[in-house]
Image (cartoon, rainbow, N blue to C red; front, top):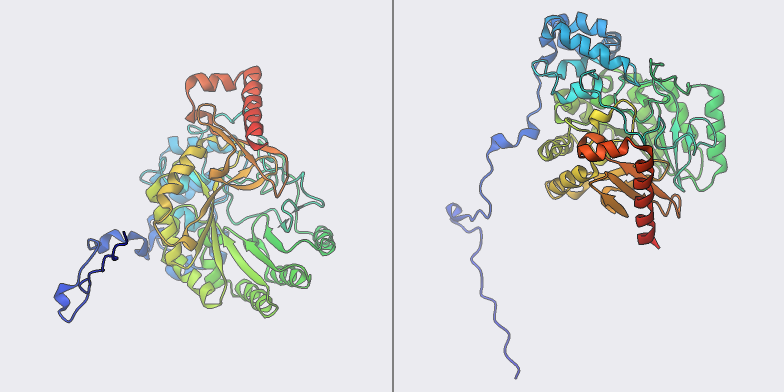
Length: 470
């Protein structure tokens, strides 16, 4: 028998003329808990003995930052002096002897390190390796783990995705990160690595532009290296305008860690900023997008200076996106990643990607597991707006490209093996990623040390993944 629908009862308005009767559906938030809005604007660099008399105008000069970069353990000792003991310096020297990257740290970064607890500090871990923390490399690691050189039709130009190319225009940076996935080419030779040369030469650039001109499917270009902060203003204009003049190129981005480690360049290098702005404005007039992609990894890297610099870019209509690297002891705690994302959003930088740490030589102590990435991503999702929530990805070793961290075909947390496919990039192939050995059981670490067992584990993982993709 038909029944009458239940009539909805009118609800009391949340707000009426009596303002004291406003209904709060959530408890009030303690303003002190909104920490991502509280960006430091103190003279923090004056805590460093060598810079205690440096005024703000001098510290904000990008030329002073370049001139005073820390490029050796000896210079580090001279700068921080009594803040650290001889044991710590000896530990740093031992770390660099085993590292694939040379040392170069901007005064801005060095001053932000917590020198009362340098062993645990998230910024120190990214730039200063310690011999006491170095862990043996995973046996499946290779120097160019992403296979960028194998996908390079000309030196320094990787064409992996159907419509996108990676253009490595130079091989130097304003700082050298320990975790750099291009330690095979970036920076000076070290005791461990003789670098592939990718100098900023006209002949090499011309070959890259010729290739991009001929490949009509290319629509998207990443200009990286090295670091676009190292490009002169005229080079910014040349690269930008030559790409804009290619009809089928619709968008490109300049990649630089600069805003995270030397934001004052945006404030005081007017020629560089004007050159970037000119390219962005010309691109917009042509219906093409030109953006800046940067690389903040820890909330403490975001200061009032960062906010001022990003404010200038925002006023000029320059889109800035961020790509972080997920690192143990740096940003692998859920609350740290939430804080980072909210701070970036607060200064108009869009969190874009979080990369699970690549298989880079000498950085096993910075790597963490796929499972940990999944856990942190779950906590971050919903903490802020979706367009300000980064996607966690594994850049599949061997050239599979970026895969959503959840999209593995197979993952065994006991062996630490995850297997991904990349149908749009390299159809039919399987790509393996390996969790760090220190996160596995003692028995499993011993198994990885046995070449026969190692082969069997990888073979079994690939076979299982293949059976699931048929």
